[in-house]
View 1 (cartoon, rainbow, N blue to C red):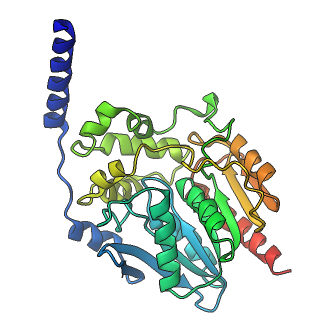
View 2 (view 1 turned 45 degrees about the vertical axis):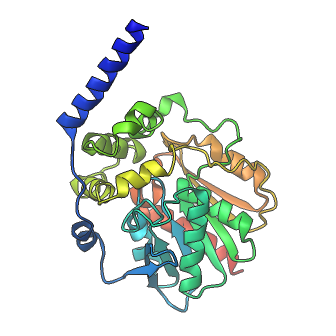
View 3 (view 1 turned 90 degrees about the horizontal axis):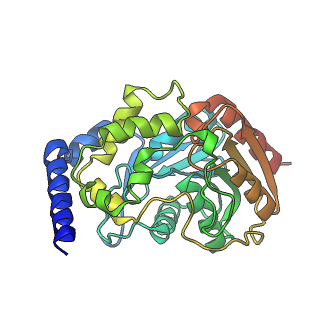
Length: 323
């Protein structure tokens, strides 16, 4: 018993020491908002007093495309596609609760249900009843989950390196793809979650981006600063922790997605270190009407790693819907 007590005291001391050494304060919201909003940024005030950051860009008369970012990311991840596709399509992007300039919300709800609610709130606010819905990683999970709940609203889906249902097998990262972002693994540990809201995440941001983006040259100081400063926006670290432990699978346990009759484009980087490319084949097997594109040289974020090539494939898919 004494030994156990001593170990506990030492552990507490080390945690406190780490917090003191690497403590970093939040960045004021106004400072971050001023840097990462632009003329296209809009803020929707919800009934509970929270606000959602979104952008409604492109051809107002075009087919609407709603795009949802992944974990720790923001709507900025879609800007390369917006610049390529906005002549023909109306493109709506948003920051999910606990992310981007939405950040902490009054309800303190940050799970799958909150994401679906945010998508619903924004699409209803901008007045679109039917749209193409796409998402990357966690946002891909929000995409198919939203479509299960609101199939009448979704014309087609775009799943980019998407998280699968929680009970699918063969969806763990392959060992030859590297260990993936260290932050995701640390956030699975209770001891780390106890201090994560106080410590400086800068070293983890750099490692995580290099891993997720397959060491792409797009990972530069500007990109790292964007992720870092949005995470450090006042209240966001606590909100991220409030969303539960990050996972490469959705909490939704449904494995039978064959009720989703919408045409679906599955896009995947074969070098994805977070969600194995084998998961693309599982989506292909379980969703009836799919087109699958695998990028041999890309990682987890194809729309930023190679915007031109990936956007061209999106355009090809969307053109096929018009025939």
